[in-house]
Length: 415
Image (tube, rainbow, N blue to C red; front, side):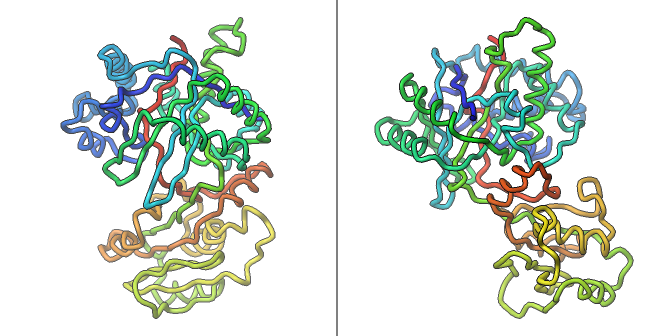
């Protein structure tokens, strides 16, 4: 059983939706966020990153940052930039990128289902990263960034969504500056909402596609509120958190590539020799950059040359160890390049496939990095299989595009 509960969302007035909607807070730095909001007082970054409205140099984790975020949110509500739906509703959120669309349902997931592992994760979280969003959600008294969930397709859900779309006009329909289309419909029919609730009750589990830290933080805030109100009934809004659930068939996982500084003391010839002891290695003679075409193959860019690495001889019986990102980590990045904890080692960085392989070449050619690796994307089936088995993927295993915009839906924990 899965819960996706309707709520009385706050959302931007239609004429300002495109200016309010912003990329997630964690895909840019404070400086980039300051630049992003120039000449746009409506951007949701004023709420997601309150430090941009405070003096330069302000610690982005200072209490005043969260207070500023809450102040900005309340001011925008008071000014009528955000309006609230009078009854609990669900929302359809469609994103379109380069002709491909994915259509999800925005509602609230249950903190209890997360705790019972009915909402399944595939990544570890770092508590220090959770603390930031715990303070943000608690101070703002709201979930401001939706969690990206997925589930195995169900015909009745798909049909209900398409039927609503075909018979109702959207409340928002705009293209953001990164060329992503955003279209939103409000499902305000109690009959349809109940039918969707019944359909989701037959979904065995939902899976976190993106937003593990935000999800963990939202749950922690809900549990904090329960301690503050020991007589809670379970129906209060703080028992639920903002999510968008997409059927898995519509999602696309992009490659999540690696760039590394230094060769761990090896010369180029010594490094290539070490790599050849684990992988079959061939110099790439094709045109352009090398993008792997199948699992267990990797592109490697070194000294302005691409090489094709093949891992056919490596045992792939374990669902986690058989991931391409795990194979690269366990057989090359760790033992050869000495990068044993990719989450904390400053010599490695990660580049989402949406930025293209030219970005890998650029960073190596500039001398900033020494070697780059292009990856074959992890599949959604691998993600679900690992989560179902209670296992955890290697860091930076998946990159989903397009990204959900923040600011189109706000879920207040208490009115």
